[in-house]
Length: 594
Image 1: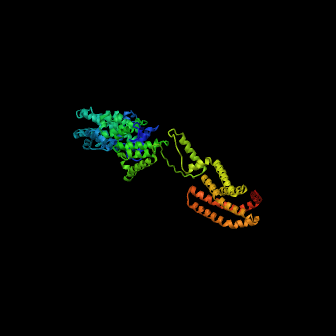
Image 2: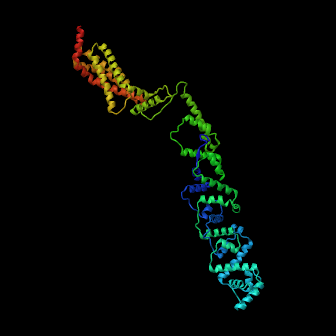
Image 3: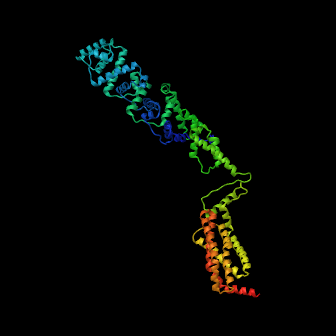
């Protein structure tokens, strides 16, 4: 059997318990085994034993009687001749009685029964009737009647009176020549029987054997049958005791062994083997050999399947693992072609198993290379979260600890975000400073001033911080890469709105006061600022609703950042320029004078 060790073993009790619920032919085995395991085995009557074993009830009665006789339990085996004769005649059709007593004995017992019944009933007979009843010549009977009448002046007598009279006067001259020795013996037997009836005397089997001239062993069996059926009706014994007695005593006696066929003998030997080795474990081959002697309902394949199923049910270990490839190959190479599993595998299932092997093979070719192998991992975790980052770190630690893996790379959106998060703060600060310096230099060159670029860069950076604050207070997460991209876009795009407004303000301040310069700068710059800002806000917002993951977050954040920048430029920048007007204008005048 595939993957089943040849030395795999189990006890008969484990095996029988496993199959008895689905196969009624093993109920006897289960009963025998369960009884053998008990400290105090159950006792069974003859009727109960007959229902369990393939033996007729009457034979069981005989066996119980024989057991008592063999064990010497015959102390109280006593009965009256009348009880014995009545019992034998009432059960004369039983095979055991037929085989024990010949026809002559049965006829004699019938006569005895009739005589004993007439004795109990005090029935009287004429000499012809009595001669016929006791089997004595009529002339002899008539002579005895005559002698009796002459002495007792009565015309009728009971059999007991007759027998007693004959025996009491057997030596009389008139009778001495008429009563032979054999007749005296028979009359003595009759006298004993009739006296026993009247006195209700009990006889042992030995006493009746001597009295009736019947073999004592046969009488012992008859006494046992009588005792089991009428006296000790609740007699019981354990299954192990019963089976042991059958094999060790009954079947060793040719007289009784003939009542059992070879099949029954084989089954009894099998049962005894199991009962004697109840705790012994057997391999599948050993248990098959044992059970095949008891039933032909189990074939070797079925036993092997039962052992495999029992092993998977009892000995399965949760730490057992195998790859999908090994599992699919095992099904194709070992299971679907095994005739033992044919009945369990339908055509559709067989085709699916065969197709799965090809699928696994093709997938392996796509994922396995000469130098590297690719593993695609899908999780239900969010793209960026503390739980996701913790899982990625655990994955890397596990791969690093594996001695079979010398080099590996974990790639994808989440790993990329995780790697960025490890250096995010320093990189964000670095990018922010570089961006501010670069834009400051460009604007300073454009305006030939240090104050104006400082104000404009500060204004846009405030918009970036406002955007981050809105995301934080709203409970929305933000991708690290999205935040870096948004900062770069806001610095590079929305600062143009501030440069445009500042340019108009500086130009108008040459000819106008602060208030007029602010108003005229609004009038000239607001259309351009609103048009450009609106386009950027609306487009990125729409794209953000239809894009996925990082792209959606970047677009939505750009839209929110552009809105914040536009609000600051239109509402806060004019006021800041007015507050710093003296620094801006004074610096320009000094430049002109220079």
